[in-house]
Amino acid sequence: MLEKRLTVPIGLEGFKQPKVPTILSYDPSQTKANAFTWGAQKHKFSQIQGIKLLLDPGQETPLYIPETNTAAELKKIKKPATDVVTDYISSIYTHALTRIEAEVPSDYLKMCQKKFVVTVPAVWSPKAMNATLAAAKQAGIHPIALIKEPEAAALYTLRSLQDKALAIGDAFVVCDAGGGTVDLISYEITAMTPRLELKELVTGKGGMAGSLGLNKRFGSAVQNIVGEDQFFHLRKEKGFEEAMNQFDKTIKTAFRGDPDEDYYVNFPMAKLQDDPSNRLEANCWNMKGDDVKKIFQPLITDIERMVEDQVNLVRVKRLNEGHPKANDIKVSTRWKPHE
Image 1 (cartoon, rainbow, N blue to C red):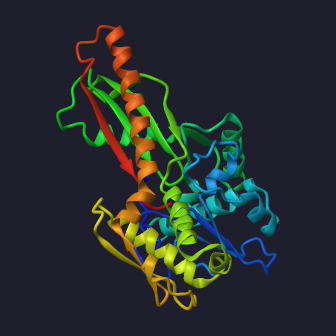
Image 2 (cartoon, rainbow, N blue to C red):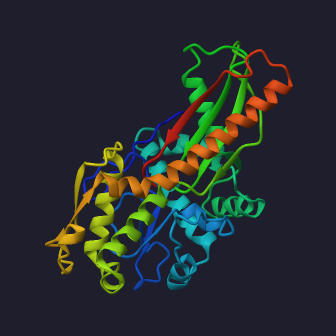
Image 3 (cartoon, rainbow, N blue to C red):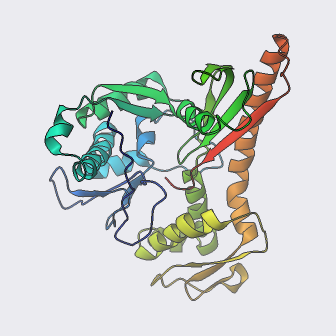
């Protein structure tokens, strides 16, 4: 078996990405099939984020996350959602082959039998799953198996903890807090040797409370600070893109709940009107920790509710079964601050 872990590409801006961002940016003046930038590359044009979410537009968005007009963005680039997802998957696949071929003879690689596994949110509809399969096949990835994201996270987590105080009968709730969705799944360990074996306890659940929602709420906070008229122009300018990047890569990841912490959000060349009452001066917003907390709070509350619901479902099931460890449930969280 050929096993190769790929390094994440570094964007032209020189920022080391913790994962490949699910971003595409199309050049509106070009009609060529590859006239776009992707992932951690430097993007010159408007960005499409949370690409996989395009495949399941029927998912209910929480009221605390501002709506985005995805249909309008797709209309601008004149591409259906499946083709956009295909472009992204194809880019990752091409990059992966390039990196592998740098260390493995290409002729040998062509001879290798390839199998592909793609993860999807637990809340995905059958229609979205079929669209995912279609997009992957168009990108040259075939044969393919789909696995739920929290299931993949659970398998990784439990295997990494296999030698650390795990025992038969232990129950785990795994919360996979990603960029677009938050997914939960519950397992019980049924065997440790000769290999780790698990059984699913209750149906996995999830919701649209991923970290992309934080970015949208930050944009809404900026709109409230600068006002409707200024924001109408600001959101199209480079200054807003720079501020959004600053929030996404620096502020969001650094926040630890201190309401008195100071953050300085810059809007280069934005020509915003000073507003000392809102701590906005010289195109710089002095954002307090309490402002950041308000952005986080509804998502954290929603995630806590989902975890609590899953734990209660597991507890009730094991109590009804008379399980000796009915009240002993472990929770593991996998958090992705970027998407």
